[in-house]
Image (tube, rainbow, N blue to C red; front, top):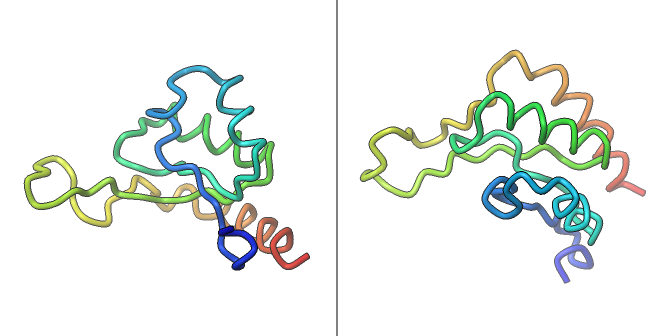
Length: 104
């Protein structure tokens, strides 16, 4: 498995996967995920806050992704994940906490 090989299991695209069904999201994340995609061009500010709250509550790595699928993506730049500097402190706390979890 990924975790046996010291990899991390991350849920990408939680909004696409679960829609607004928070119970489904919690159930899915309880199956052994280590992280959740929080910052991506497909999430607005409300989504970012919601998924950061899930990361905090469930002690998951908050992950960034640009959802860049090639040059035909006119509104998405490669590397743009909406992870602005205003989230830097909270991300540092989450990452430090999650690293301690992984080191056990």
